[in-house]
Length: 232
Image (cartoon, rainbow, N blue to C red; front, side, top):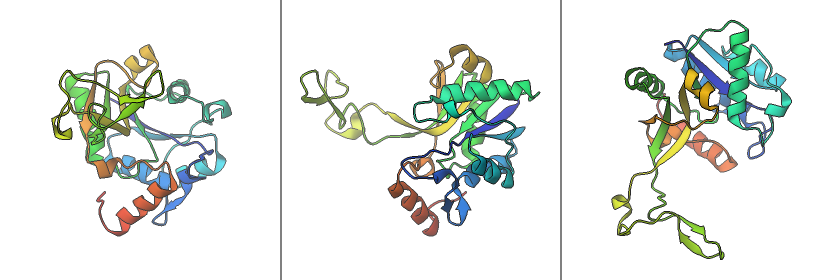
């Protein structure tokens, strides 16, 4: 297998302005994804897709390749990431890059371990699924403690079982996606959607899957580093 690490980083974050290059423990957030991908030595290339000149500059400084510029219409709030990956694959192949696996590594999840990425590729190689997703078991459970509104505007349990579990631990296990996606490129190009059939999980610890979408999560990440609650 030839695997490329693909890191998408647009410049227009609303939850935490400029978060992709904002300093986290004196390093730009995006540098964590780039450095761990390079250090893993499992990728032929580590590529950043961005429309933002400053993000591109920072990405290159930390060792990533930025071989093309993402179109601005693929850097909006409404742009689906499947289209970003489709554009990236087309551009990379047009430039002569050879790969059959694409690992989408979300740069807003700085604490993925090298072992998590290696395990995802190992599962993809050995079990031949169409994709492998990084996940952790979620304690918020639609069979037990998550609700939605019905057609009349009243609360109802999101998913019902014939016999409702009396404890959360007895409910079916559900998983939280957290920004690590390993794709068989041939299958991704066939379905053109981030969620493919015949996909398998690679479980990681919840703290390693912290996704920074808000100011509170940014502060939490800083605290985790300072308190040495995370090891890279």
